[in-house]
Length: 57
Image (cartoon, rainbow, N blue to C red):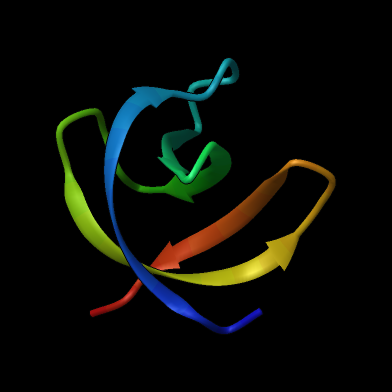
């Protein structure tokens, strides 16, 4: 956790409250983003097959 990655948001989550990016097949949920956004994210939580991240400013 805490690592930063450059990702592109490709879709919205099913609940519509976060953008979804994929990094080597791993799903990252990023709040306050939308499809097409290219952002640097910091991983805040890791689950089974997914992670939560926040945009680094």
